[in-house]
Each structure stands twice: as C-alpha cells, then as structure tokens.
Image (tube, rainbow over all chains, first blue to last red; front, side, top):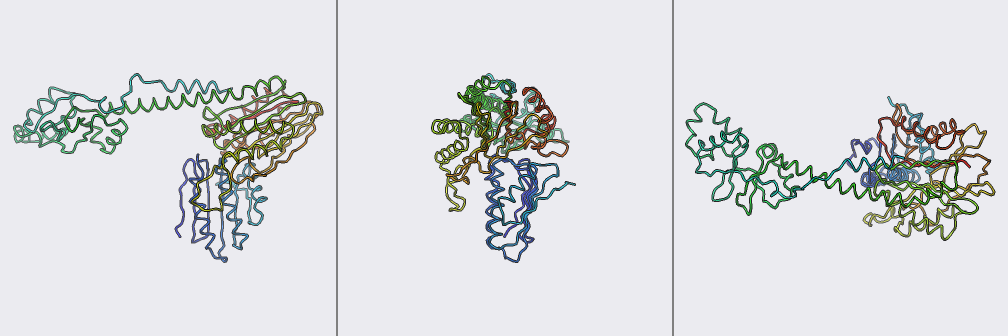
Length: 130
Length: 418
C-alpha cells in the first residue's frame, strides 16, 4: 500500500499515514468548506489498511488539532470510529488526542471521544508545542 | 450590531463599470500591418514614425502570418552590418512566425487563458485579432487585463448584490423574534454576527401567556449554504411548534430532527455500497429553552449547544451541557430523543447561550480556542451588570482575544436576566 502524505494548507491539516510504521498523524487546523472531499480518501485508505493489517502490528494514531469546523468534526469522529471498530475486532491500536493545556474545548472533545468510543485506547494528553 | 456596517462595506467595495467588454472584438485596434513584400527598411520607418507601436502584424493575402516585435527588431537591426544586410530584404526575417491569433468572437475569458498560455510574448506583443481567419487588427494585453478586471468586478458585484439581498431576507425572518424578545425581556442581549453577510447561526423567540420559548441554533456551514439551512430549519421548527407546542423542548428538537431527515433523505449509508449517491449530512446544533414565568422554571434541551447560567450569589457560572446528538445529520437516528433539563429560576437569574463560533474562535498568544472557561470567567465578573453592558464586556474581550486571527465562523449569542 502507498503511504498517504498530505502537506498542510491554510484550511486542511497535515496528514501522515505511514503503513510501514503503522502510524497515522493528523496535525493542524481543519476547516474546508466540504470536509468530505478532503477526508473521504483518507477514510478509504484507513478502512482498507485496518481490514488487512496483522493483529500483531502495533498501530498508533496521533491527533493534534487546533481547530476544526463542524463538518470536519463528523469526519474526525468517523476516523476514530473506524479505529474503535478495529480495536473491537482485536487490532492493537493506541490513539492520542493532544490539546494545549489551556485549550478546554479540545480537551473536552477528547474526553467526549473517550466516552463515545469505549473500546479504543485513547489518551487525552496536554501538549505544550515547542 | 455590525450587520449594517458589513452591508455598507460590501456595497461600496464593488461599483459597476460603465461598459463591459465581453468579446475580443471589443479590444480591436485597427492597426497598420505589413506584407512579406515590405522591406525591413519599411518596418524601421514605421517603428520610428509610431513610437507607440509595439508589434507590427504581417499579413499575406489578407491572412495574418506573423508579428514583428519592436524591441527584438530594433535590437537585431542595431547589430553591426545587420542594417546593411537586411535593409532591402523582406521583413519576415525578424518576424515571429507563431504569434497569438484569436478570432473576434472569442470571449474575454478564453482570450485571457490563451494570452497566459502564450507566456511573456503575448503579454508584451499583444495578439492579432482575425475575422474568419482574415486580419482585422491587433489587441493589447493591457486592455485585455482591464476587461478581465472589469468583468471580475461586475461578477463580484452581482454575487454580492445577491448575497446582500439574501441577508435582507434572512433578517426579515428574524424580525418577529427580535420584537417579541424586546416585549418580553426587559434585560437581555442578542449577538448575531455573520462571518460573510449571511449566517448559518439563527435564533427564534416567541412569547406566550405563561412564558416564552427561546432557541439558538447553529447550522452546518456558514455563508450561503449555512443560511439556506437556517431557512429550512426555521420552517421545520414552525411546523413542529404547530404540532407539539412550545412547552416540551426535547420533543420539539426530536420533531425537527425527524422532519429534516425525512425531507433531506438522510439515511446513514456509511456502511452501504460506496457508489451510492452521497446523502445530505447537514444539520444543526441547538439549544431549545422554554421558560415558565408563573412557576419560574426553565426547561432546556440541547443538541451540543450548552446553557450557561448564573443565579445571584453564585460564585461561578454553571454550565449545563446539551446531548451529544446533532439535529439532522445522517448519523443521528430518526427516533433520537433529547433530554429535558428542568431548572428553577430564582429572581434575577442570568441565562446565556453561545454558538461554537464564539467558543471555538482561535486567538490569544497561543492561537487556541476562546473556550468555555474564558466565557464563564467573563460572565462571572460582569454578572451583576445590565445585559447590554455584559454584551459589550464580552464582545470587547472576544475581539481582543481574536486579535489578528481571522474570524472562523458565524458568531451568535443570547443572554437574558429573568
């Protein structure tokens, strides 16, 4: 499979999906007018990857976002939902939701995700950017 | 409110050009041309006599076959012996054999793409305008740029005019709510700031004999699509109100949800075949709130959008979170329910609602969200003051926090003391 590497733009985050190291990172801001256009290929890639990845692989997902609009919210949820489903099916996945220590909105969103997706190991971590 | 300022600014930004050039023919200059029979000496004289002449077309049997660029010609001619060698020879020696030739009827848009594709040459030399392949004249790139700019301004003006009028419609639709709010609440504020003239945030207020219904909602998107959604939601809200009345906010939200999903064909296809036509995944966050004035009781049901509350003597502003399900959206179930929260209201209680455009706005030193904590701190500090003063304290703190960060979303808020 081909890695997915998308550089950040003003309206979309940086995406690094490296199949070889089993890591997915989404970093930045996300407020495209139509988030489906941006996230659909990523969701497809993640779906196919999770279907074929070995149960021995240690998968890591890193979400480090400062801002996302409501249509991005739904698609981020759907990515995490895919991870949660795969975790339930026995895949080893650790997800990290990073937020600035002072950013109560991002922290709260992380905790909501924890409540909503019970199977996935999801760490909500305050993170001071360098 | 800033709405009128926005409108005035939008209108002054665009003013209609007097006459629009839409076809290449509008740029035609009936310029002199030479033929292969003309000598370089003739061309030299023409350039000397006409200092403004940049390019000289060459035609053969009425058809354009090339263009002589002034600078290239003069430089070549200035080289040692060139003048002596070429003076009597045909002018095609220094001619560009592949000039840009466009037909008169070519649209300005097509022309601009051709000129850009032609690179530096077409920008400098201009282009030849033909009529059925026969030479008609020349056009200058600078005239074309002006025509493009005028067309752009005109299109912009038409779009802005249309959105401005959309804003008039949107504001008319909320007038009754504003008037009812003024009649019913003697201490309140309303903030409604569309990011782009029209808004995806909207509100509804209606007074009854025993109390009032107040609703703040935030539809997916902003600008024109967001505003579309507010109109749809307003219509569904009205029909749900006719059926269920105002006193059970949870039931009202559920009724709006069913109507949206039915009307927009929202069924969750996320696990279905991938080629299925994408369904609408639009909806809203909302706070629905019924206040019973006789019993001094408030019933709140929320989809994401929380309620902020302060009672006299409280040392902090309390937050009541809404349910997690949004209204509409493909992933919200048709039979989704929303919980009613019943809250007693001591005299002089303050109630507030904010859309996420306020809470999620980036700013500050770190460029992070304004957040609920900051809102609660500001509200607590000024809770004793009249609502219009609280509004200005909030907005000045919000604007200062936003600083030079762009506004991300529509912003709306309602506050009242009861």
